[in-house]
Image (cartoon, rainbow, N blue to C red; front, side, top):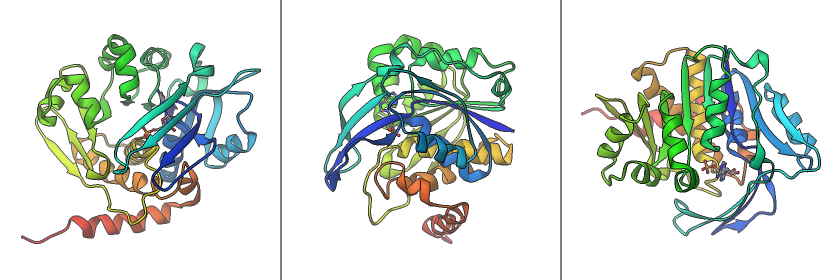
Length: 304
Ligand code: AMP
């Protein structure tokens, strides 16, 4: 079994109340691949970078069992670049700059041997590109998860709504859920979004955890309170990677198992924020995940 991941592989520049980075490695797909790699899955990446992207990062991904056959390297062009600045609360941020570069004319090509991947993670990207990937699959994957953000809602809402018709799980943050549904209450927002196509919606609330909905039920997973939060960039993508990684490993997409996957998503996200960029995710092992699982259990267990 395998997971097909599509999304940005990028350069980021990040400013938080604790410091500022120069150009570092980022991108939604990078975070997703790293965080789902802990579950021992085969991960198939489809993305694009420019000639300026470092060889050693591609090697690092390969070492984590990510198949990079679908990563296009565009000669003479520049990699997607994003820069953002976090507010004092570290939960909200402003985008300072988005340079689409290679993404401007990205035509995703899913390699033949990736086209039967059972799990599909459509990471944050142009909705039309997400749809193009979906349309190249030989048969409908067992589970399709789509992540998006306000940038695409502001500029490509109709395309996004079209892509949503075909997906199983949508992951978005609370602000984006309100923007998409035009509802303030997250319960009402989820109900409205579920009518747009997805069978499940996950609303990420940063350090306040995440909510999982289907038409009948809802479940809440807290975020692990972390002593040192350095950089929340990629937390949402690491969450999505942990979520789909666990579902693929267990091959069970029931609501009950999605609850467990939500906890694993919270675990991978909790590591992501502890260092700038992808650094922490590159360092940890599956054993680290298991010991953090115990912390989660004691955080929420009580006898009443
Ligand atoms: P997150 O913090 O989970 O929302 O993800 C942050 C990552 O998303 C960064 O590493 C960026 O490179 C990437 N990113 C930022 N803006 C966009 C965009 N408009 N489309 C796709 N990826 C983006």
